[in-house]
Image 1 (cartoon, protein in one colour):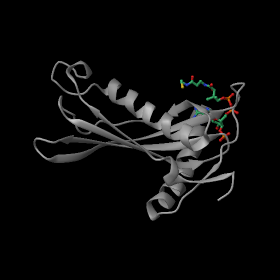
Image 2 (cartoon, helix red, strand yellow):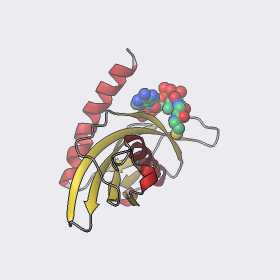
Image 3 (tube, helix red, strand yellow):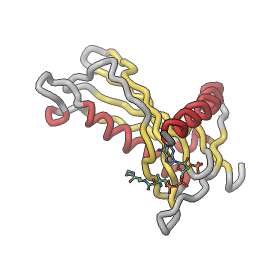
Image 4 (cartoon, rainbow, N blue to C red):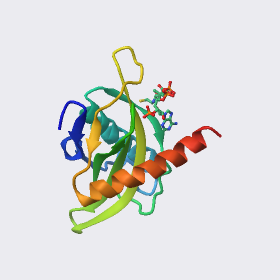
Length: 157
Ligand SMILES: CC(C)(COP(=O)(O)OP(=O)(O)OC[C@H]1O[C@@H](n2cnc3c(N)ncnc32)[C@H](O)[C@@H]1OP(=O)(O)O)[C@@H](O)C(=O)NCCC(=O)NCCS
């Protein structure tokens, strides 16, 4: 590793939140917007840790809500860099909900976000390459390129 390279594992961020009543709707389920906020924060921390710069959200891919999350559950978010392109990087966030009382953990969402690292003048600046090591990291690294191509194609529509 040199200054232009960093292991993906070095910037993984894990965040756990407790779902409180003011995070929920009338049915006692976690609000989608609240979850999106936590996803954005977790991914922002990951991109900033990797690039050692302030990073801004350039885009968020589609997020599906397959499972509702109840008040009183613990929500754990795990963010890691999938791939760095030039100034931008794809961050993947996996979300798990867990009821300690029931003892059940569910993978509720996966989100992909693009962050851009900025220099001191607020201009996009090249970020260090992220080096995948594990099989999962290598798979995500390959898949990230296909998602970027689709994303940039849609951006220009
Ligand atoms: C994101 C932003 C910095 C891009 O700036 P820009 O002047 O368009 O710069 P560029 O066209 O050179 O793009 C810079 C990088 O962003 C990527 N990018 C820009 N828009 C994108 C989008 N919608 N989706 C994915 N990537 C995007 C480009 O592909 C490029 O990546 P690369 O250097 O790795 O190839 C700028 O649009 C911005 O500041 N947006 C507001 C960000 C914000 O306020 N976010 C919410 C609060 S954090």
